[in-house]
Image (cartoon, rainbow, N blue to C red; front, side):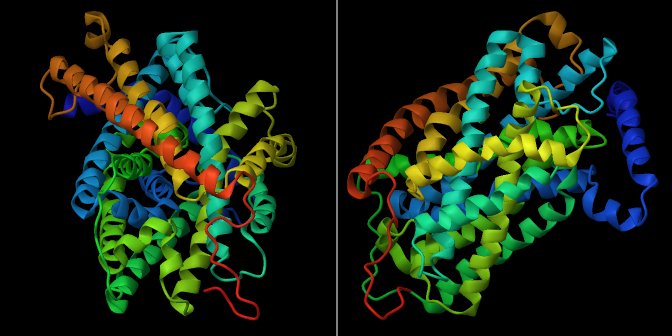
Length: 474
């Protein structure tokens, strides 16, 4: 292990030292730089872990009980663990490909000062322009709709505190609020936000768990799931979406001082996320059962009190953070398209980023289907972006004997040869294409179309209870 570790350090030493020196130069001359550095400049292993754990589960935490009601408790638990492991594996593959790409470019004396490497550039450097185009299309579309989902969730959540405004109006308001993320330069500057975000989801998850157990089972509760294949695979695809949040893995790695240490961070983040998702979804389904089938947002079934209001407010703040996580790579792409990515002025970059927010705002108003949209995005976009493409890219990058022999990173200790590596990757590709994209796509699109037929596009208040004059709908 020692020679490999030394090789890793040597491989990335020059760009690590160069970039860290640049960052130190940026920070050292500023008054009050100590506090600013602590809150603003993050590139450690711990920063990356907080970023991964915080970004992995946000509003989806509130929809997992809904998925359990569609699938049943046993399937829900098994698939959470299964997709959590699959997601961690493909995040590992992405990290390996990133290091391979950087090591090759380093040998060519390519400098990445003032340039953030993105996934489509890794694919371009390793596999060529066609893979770049595919990666760019899927990644940008997924991140676009990932940002849309956060806006929808903001409107859905705030409604449970203040229903004087409908959800569509709240979407207008939070679209403007989330647009302020244009001022955050990169993932390097999310240190304090990632830390706070994880604390917020932790509170919410345990509020759901404890609240469900304290309130107990509702009268006449039933647990009939799964009853229909379309519901079963819709729920399964939402779980696939839950653990497919690593469309921003490359950007998080690039923000690290030593990216080669990222390899197992996503797995460690997933293990922590299990402590949030499994207890909360299980407890909510136990307490409310089939009622969750018509309440995609778990907040809808819990009684209003100070604890719930606190959870709603914390989730709103966290969704703002997650919106920034999903949107920042889109900002980078847009900056590169218009030739502004090397600009150092935060205010100028913020100004040119604003057009990215407009289509997100518009789509959130067209498709306000909190819950069903997660499954549709999971089946059609996440399945390719974070499962199929990384697995295929890894196999094609190392298909030749010379590429395997000269690989910047060696095989993990639990896979003794390349044959097993290819077998694992092939299984992921086939499974996700058949179950995730095939059955999941069929089910989630059926469910999504049903929501459109029931509520219509531009729905003013999706799944809102009927208003009673002079009464609060809580």
